[in-house]
Amino acid sequence: MTDKNFEQMEMFAWWGVPTLFRCELERDPTEVDIGLIGVPHSSGNGWNERDQHFGPRALRDVSMGYRRVHREFKLSPWNECRVRDMGDAPLPNAMHNDQTIKDIQAFYMPLVAAGVKPVSIGGDHSITLPILRALVSSQSTVVNQPLAMVHFDAHHDSYDASDYGDKFLGNVEWAGAWAKIMCDEGLVDPKKVIQIGMRGHMDAETEGNFSEKAGYRVIEALEFHKRGPESVFKEIREIIGDTPVYITFDLDSLDPLYAPGVSNIEPGYPGLSMWDVMQVLHGMRGMNVIGGDVVCPMPTKDHANKITSINAAVILFEQICLIAERAKQSAALSAI
Image 1 (cartoon, rainbow, N blue to C red):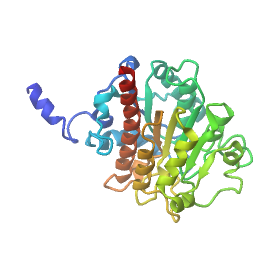
Image 2: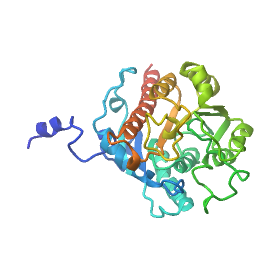
Image 3: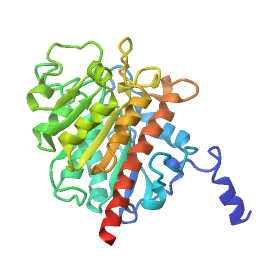
Image 4: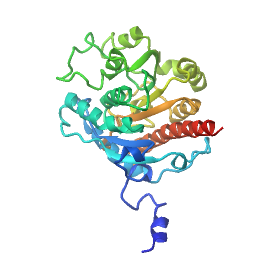
């Protein structure tokens, strides 16, 4: 077989060893600008459905055939940045959530120290906390201040002692508490945290209390549908400005039509559509996005056509492009 034969095969999704978006596998963070990372962790949100750890593997499969150039941005992120699949975070204590949170942070620390901007696929939503801790740590060269955040979710994930107690099934840093802990630890500027898409009935009347007390801007799904995406992304820009911002996307914020394969699914009340999400993300073009994640896929309960995984890949691609376009703009300014 010649090199030309291998190059020809690269266009086919069904050929080759799967990596995220068919990117080169790279372990050395000094060779990476945007790191694509799998975090197959599910013991932080495993009381009902625990198969979220299959998410990274499913995404590597479906993303192999995803398109390479962003139609709206006129951008090929692979040409602008060194985008690499950095493999999965090792989880030697995978059944012990609070220890695994420490293990995840330890994996990300040398990456952000080298300036890698991480785009991750979970796993459950507890993975966001250790990523934020690494990004805002003293070792990080990506950011040196508390972050802004855009958080898509059907749930606040900022539950405190008045909701479930200090521990949930023995865990402290579980998937329902990370959005409180990040504020308690000063990882984010609470006045620049925007939570979008909350819907469905609550486990307790106090469910959203911490978000409100902390000063998060909560845009529930009903408000989103009344206002529309353009109004929402304009508010995002007004609130966050050029502050470094992290995007975390829980797939249950999508309506089950678009994402049936998620944990903690919220039926009955309309969630966000994929086009809603695309418009908001496109409205964030030029903002200082320094990382992102997509969490809570459940490939084992997805539709046979893998629609949840496919939509997750679309959202990951958008996050990659937001980071790459900003890098391209920064490089152009530096050249002047």
